[in-house]
Image (cartoon, rainbow, N blue to C red; front, top):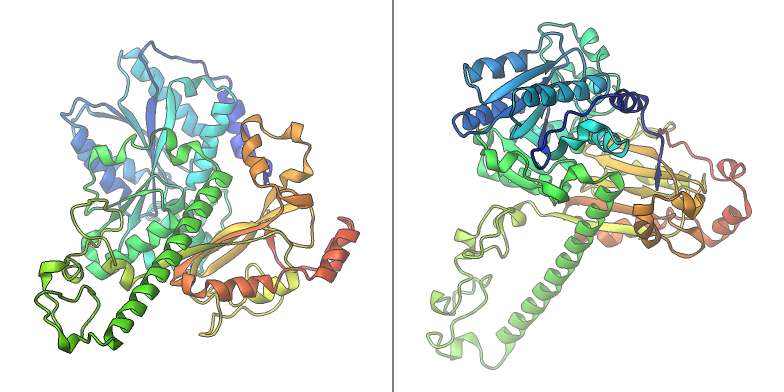
Length: 550
């Protein structure tokens, strides 16, 4: 879908940057910029201090920008103090606001200053590290860099956003995921309020203060190349496995690392994304990657289920055959079923290696080491996070859809104007869904493309823009033409339902969820009325109480 116009702060930043003089040197390549995101207390500053210590004596030179909502930049002072007299880094502080919104201009001005200073002194930085505020939106910062690049800003000939890193508090993540509070009620996630009253502190963040804590948390996880699960020592193995499963499902393409006290290696964090990283893509690219990952996961789940069913059937047949377990020599033919617990026959380890799986199977979902077992992973068996894609080429009835949305395990009061929200009951198909997102086509408009976003206990529908089919092909971006055409089908162009569902064993409830969503689609008679009406008539024909975020 075509994106809506970019926010005014970002446009102002690009206009301001257009006048920045280039100070490019003859040194090859651009200086990679790494962005550190994560809520206050997750460990961003601790990580930064560890990176500075690692860089000291390694011959690397870092430029460091620390952004703080407060007027006193505590994080920058702590990092600078910890670095001591080291010459491995040079600091610049940005206070009184967030670089994703109110301090957009300041971010690029600061980057230009760092570049100018290094050039004047005759060296280039190995990396530039930006520590964002606790409530910074990484997508907004990424968009700023992309807009500046598209505008031909000279500074972007020297530096480029390379890697997005999110530091996750392993102890607090799952409780934050269940929050329904808006960011405006949680100034503690942005900065230490010791120096500024909360009202003044949050006034410096001119983004959507009504955005939920969970919604922002999910963005920070999904828009990342590296996820550092910090404070891993504060959770037990089961909690850590569950967290790895959840964040891995939210962002299948990210490198997931665990650490304590921010003790990640430089080579795992700085400038590791390259050309395929999150900095190079946009929201639609992210969505397509999520759809592809969910489709692959769904196929794998179905294949696994079919194999398991075949295996169980074969074993049952063997038990009832005339060659029963009690009538043959098990030393010569031991049982090959690792799941079998029948004490009447042999389970010798000599002829199979599945018996060790329960004790030795690797728990790390990111591990690809072929020397040990990953079949029937214990972490997945305990916390089976599945996903699938719901797809349809017919609009939803807004009235029926909002009824179904009340069955989400979420507080949807903010998204539905009429009626009371309630949690999912045991028989409701959506009760195990922890994340769902994707394109939404409502019968109230033939032009508007909406985006469905549900995470934890929060749901919102966002006006994403217009369907590409509403625009003449000559207005499509040249580099996206093939991608846009791939989404077209029939007379309705790229209009579609395309929603990724992620949750605890949702693959088992896929048929029920799809049936529930199918029931919200327009009937044949309603579709006839829809096509016979115009854009002015459809809102009255298909009224909607959905509150859409523009």
